Amino acid sequence: MNIIVCVKQVPDTLAVGVDSKTNTLIREGVDSVINPFDLHAAEVALRLKERYGGVVTALSMGPSQVIDTLRQVLSLGVERAVLLCDIGFAGADTLATSYTLATAVKKLGRFDLIICGRQAVDGDTAHVGPSLAEKLGIPHISCAVKIHKVTDKYIIAQRMTDGAIEKVKLSLPGLITVSKSINKPRTATLKGKMKAARAEVEIWSAHDIGADESKIGLKGSATRVVKMATPKHDRAGLLLEGSVAEQVKGLALKLQQAKVL
Image (tube, rainbow, N blue to C red):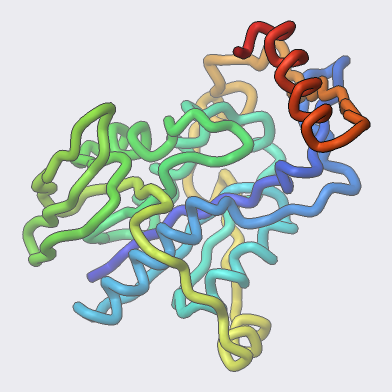
């Protein structure tokens, strides 16, 4: 199988802040990590390759530091990595991002399956996978939690919906987005890390993939972020003194006052 796995580098969401003036994420001084959902997507791709043969290609879009993220998936066993890197790609929303990825996929050539993480933890839209499938004119399954059967013509996967579990047949070529519960990602071996450090990461510009400049980056984005904010945590500590019985009585009183009891 020829499999393409889409990966994204995201800021560490535990440390990221928001610029109140520009409504953008403050990335300076914040560590970047591979999107957690995409590690599960890479694991699905690698297991399918190990069972059925083929090649796994990792595809990402972003600045040059994303090479580190691509080397991470190369260390796991992915054979090829392509980074879409161009100043024209900056500021892309999910519409422009999916167009850019679709254009790159067409340049990559024949494929059987595209695998994406269900969503990225920095945007949480879950738009890109389905939108990419739409732009390529291929069927897709979102939120897959299990792969039941794979043939050269179709895949049967299980997906979660609100209050239901569905088993869906997907004709190939197709696309699936996967949830974290689908597997436990492997860790890289020392040999894998050493091999990845020497591996070539291909870098493609907008010109290289023949992208329409009016459809990429900020120019190709139909949406704008109006406001962003980090959640506020208002927690007040309360120290109860006295014997255990007195502390329990005091806690019960506070809970009653808060109308919890």
